[in-house]
Length: 134
Image 1: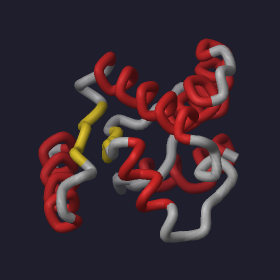
Image 2: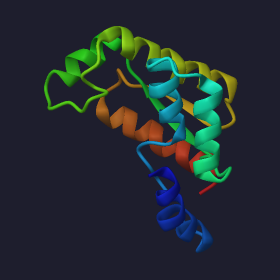
Image 3: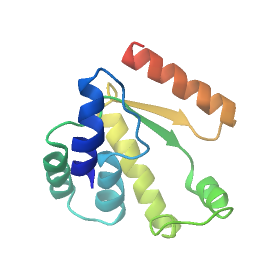
Image 4: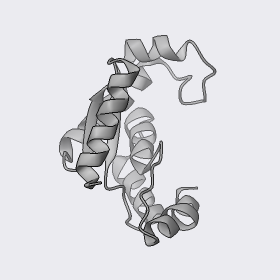
């Protein structure tokens, strides 16, 4: 799925000079499959690298929300299979995202997801414009 998305959507857009925005990436696979489900991180990373043909995102924006608030927000909508997991799973995923962000601060921007929606949107816009030089 990621390989197909890369070849059909991402690469053609990048070739024409456009920016690509995605709500998930291979880093999500690392967080959910590796940190959350306990699969070996190196194997998940190798499979992701193969699927992406080495083309990892240049910028990753992490909207960080405490697990308790996440559970409260998710209770208000239908959930997918990952979202239905228990709080311990979500805590591991959150810790995984935080670890990846801390290890690669030139690629990652962490935004406080407890802020008001307009403040989060402003932070995303500012980070995007600044980091990508747009």
